[in-house]
Amino acid sequence: MTDLTCLFEPHSVAVIGASDDPGKYGNRVMQSILESGFAGPVHPINPNVAKVLGFTSYPSMRSLPEPVDLAFIVIPARAVVDAVRDCIAARVKGIVIISAGFGEIGTEGLRAEAEIARMCKEAGIPAVGPNCMGVVCFSSHLVGTMTMDRLKGEPGDTSFISQSGTYGLSTLNQGLTTGVGFSKFVSSGNEAVTRFSDFLEYLGEDEDTRVIIGYIESLKDGQRFTRVAKKVSGKKPFVVMKFGRTDAGSQAAASHTGALAGSHSVYSAAFRQCGVIEVTRTQDLLNVAIAFRSQPLPRGRRIAVAGISGGFAVAAADFLSELGMELPPLTEALQSRMREEIKVPPFATVKNPIDLTAEVRPWYLLQCVEAALQDPGIDALVMGLWSWPLPPAEESLRTLERVQRETGKPLLLCYYASRRGAELIQGMTSLPVYGTPEEVSQVMAALCQYADYRRKTDSFPDQ
Image (cartoon, rainbow, N blue to C red):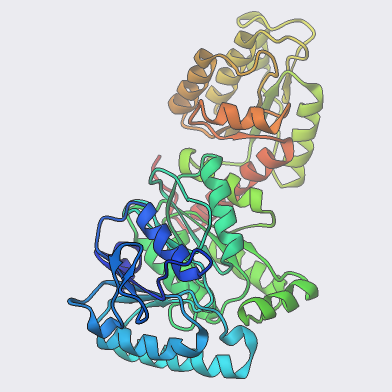
């Protein structure tokens, strides 16, 4: 595997096509790198001006006083092949080709891609793109993208490989605002040189990455992908959203990155075989990542549901059952404990789901959740949070965190009164908080699916 560290943790960068004109993509990339707080030298490459954004501009890569680790190419497609040749001559370690107009437009573009691939492979240089939105590494403060929005976030442990640029960046930004802590992001584009599987293999070994998520339209190296994905899934969760599932989506993918999407049933079967978790909605991609970051894997599929709403209990029970979870009735001893020791109201249901109905005093619910999670017959619990008062008292959230930590079982929270309320509570607790019974059930199913795979491959982690 080619070492891809230079793409995410370079010590110096150059921007070929850097400009003072805010309307130019080269300006966006240069501004993005400078504003992100990147600590190393940033060299603009533009033969038409002496300075760009106050920095000395060089006419070409060959004219730089010293080699740089990473070069961003943001110029018209017709000049990219020569720019790549210059980068190789200037001994760069990696290249990010943001420029579009290659395989996605037809035969001529494919020929240019092939030439770029030939040169980079002969030189042993990894290259992102072409036709991509760039790379991000939060620990090295490198935000090398064309985005107009500033990507702000503390370094986390989720890394994201996206074959779409704008959609991927939008998803990244959404995740940053909803509790996903990211480590690295790459928009892989047309993958003329370095492919999805290469990034996956690198991130599989990356100590700063605990969870990997991906947006896939097509794979050019299916057999290698399955080998790499199987290896990675044996160590850390890998969650994907595959687009191009329909004929219309496949045609759109072909015009987007020149991709041939292929049969979705074949992809899904391969994902299952390799332990890859597939989701079909953007929100689920982020939701599942949040849970994998903070929750242990369940020892089985026996799920308890607890809350103060009968409607929530029924909805969660339906969704969990449809997704292959079990909702076993609580033991008679546990039910007796809830009625006699915890003294739940006489109108409460404690079989599973645990439904305390309109009793809004949190003490009963917290005690029942703890008792259920302590039971060896329960592997995980989904809890519907009360809607009054909002937010739940910090003491209640700390109690739930303690219970989860002491039992070592997954505990997922659902605040379904409002999306804003769920986001507010998420900012107060390390436990995952979701906005609907559908979402929290999908996440629990993903945890169970991945746990099943790790057990089947004898790689279930010590927790």
